[in-house]
Image (cartoon, rainbow, N blue to C red):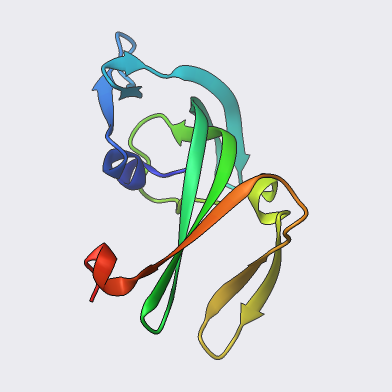
Length: 131
């Protein structure tokens, strides 16, 4: 699920519905309603972006690895929710061995190569304009 800030970076825009709620649109078309997403603070209506390729980026010295993960659906909340972070669900995390790196305060994701379809490509940082 992506929050409204990340959704807007993906060219998903919000428009006011007749009921007075901001709903997400992509390419000028309203997204289809998805499930209610629940949490500690209650539930929120989600909307679906089908058939998405999630690109993960790993940077190591002068090499950048682009790693694609296919998602059947990406959920976007209604109402420009910015207070929650974008989240990876178990549908993605179960494809990785996850290790908490306390020294760097981050999570290392190591792809389990036998699970699902994915692709990787390696590029020089300069080729991506990151140098």
